[in-house]
Length: 128
Image 1 (cartoon, rainbow, N blue to C red):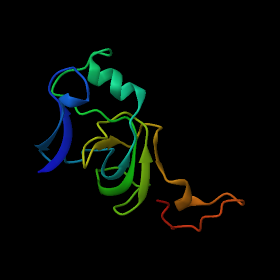
Image 2 (image 1 turned 180 degrees about the vertical axis):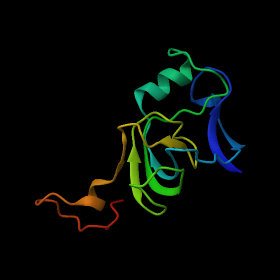
Image 3 (image 1 turned 135 degrees about the vertical axis):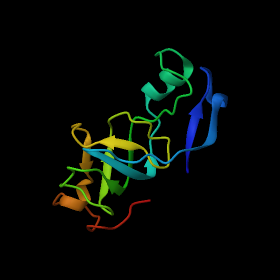
Image 4 (image 1 turned 45 degrees about the horizontal axis):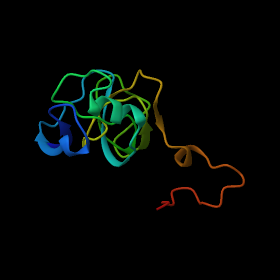
């Protein structure tokens, strides 16, 4: 089991509730992410409010950063422990959302690959 923020009906922020949900298991081409940070996107608020139609219960969350917890068959470019970020709109208000590696918005975080020459942050240093 894991946790997720769930909306069971459209409405304001008050409809969001912390719920215990089944932990997803990655299938072929999928990545299970452990979320360490997530953003609040306009699309999340539109979906939650009912402006954009979704099926309820619904876990919002369009973008997040975290680490790879588990990979499915065929995923060879990521491994457990890799730091990643996503903007694929995949229920990122969950502690462990399931992502699809084939989507273009799942990527290693920039500071894992390289850092810009003028950046004052050292590689692997956390920014809080």
